[in-house]
Length: 202
Image (cartoon, rainbow, N blue to C red; front, side, top):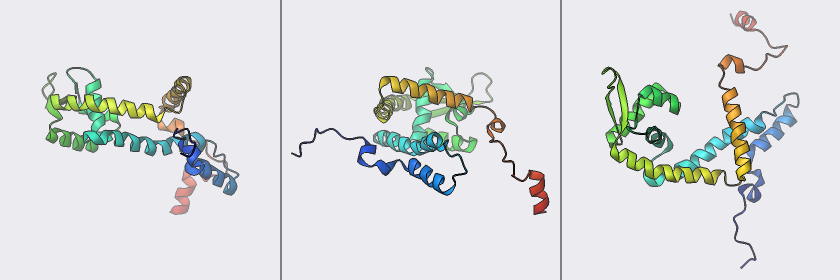
């Protein structure tokens, strides 16, 4: 025995350089000290965490023969409650998929037998997506493992820290849900105007 406690150290204890965003910010500050790159401390890490989280989630779903996009459709329908139906457009908006991406994904899930597409009973012209019994059973099993992985991904935080972080992320999400134009950074004083660029490029 090496006298260790047997506890698994946090990843940043094993490899401090794993936080590549911090290293990138140091490079920015060295090469471009004129640019305030402080936003990267949060935005850059969120983008990096997207890959980390998806790897973890997909590893949890692998035992069910799923990857996240397919799982997201099944879980969204399951969480909507009986009769587990939604319109394709509502699914597209909820899952942030393109129209083409949604159609292809639904076709694949339907061919497997996890969903079915029916005429919308409200008007007969539209289509409604419904979870099949086998799709619901699969979703029920996978949702448990998915939730367990999500808890594992935030297990380094106390309950109070998780509440605070969730509130801050919610605020960031809601306030940045404004029209794209409202999110544009102010133009630099010496930046050429669009009209000037057009003339020079003519």
